[in-house]
Image 1 (cartoon, one colour):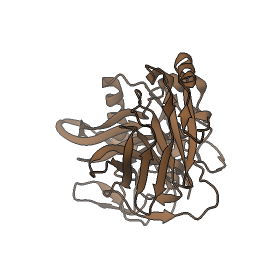
Image 2 (image 1 turned 180 degrees about the vertical axis):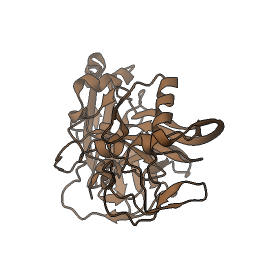
Image 3 (image 1 turned 120 degrees about the vertical axis):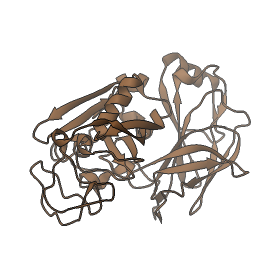
Image 4 (image 1 turned 135 degrees about the vertical axis):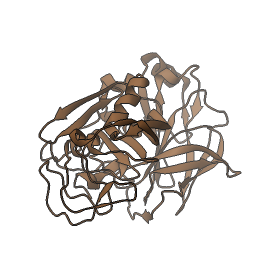
Length: 359
């Protein structure tokens, strides 16, 4: 639904959304930036007239936002802001006028950056900045049109699509390896061909895959890593989502927040994912593909591959890198950061297109 010039959405509209338990997107534009509110019917307690207008000013390293509403909403919608630039980072932060951090922002988008966050307050002025810890570059995109979040990519076959990084491509390198200080085998960049499990060459300096049948898990040695699961890209693609999955979509896109968890020496990303889902009553379904000697994660929290378009599914990232082999072949080390993220565009909307041959 389009937001009118005065920004007011009538009480009757919110009442209908509540009664239908629907998920509705309201879209507007400010100073050349498109923005969208995603409203969940089950989150509305007392329907009322609401002003959804937002003034947005995009600067090189900051986005200023001012809400036109003079009252805070009694529910927590998700706001998505479509920038005309590309922020080469994975997270951003919302600050108030006193420069106090209020909440985190998920950064998605294929061709232009999209900022997604659950609004903590809906009155006043705020600004958003990239998380300086992972900011690499900001690129201004020259365009006369508002950016779009999807790009067309042809999918040749199951091996070529997003299924590859999430689980199907893996291998056991026998050459081109060096060892890091913690004993992990890493690529020296000399591989030029796929190995016997069809694994493309691993980039120099990145961990090489490990055959799970060659690993002995030692529960006497415990370590910790940070683990999270999120699907915020779906909020930018509600129209593509299978209607039967509306009820299982988290309102803020967070399935499992970033949490420090324990794992045992020798365990893989897949091992830890299984345990986290089991202990937290999170649905997870996977399969084993002998050809690739790897587990493939089909669905988490009842959200499956292709549930939000034919380029959608789960991918995993460790320390900011999307491995080009299966999660059951990534052997964890102390203090690593593991993120499971849902893509709606073959990884391009979450910075992982390169892992499946994208740009």
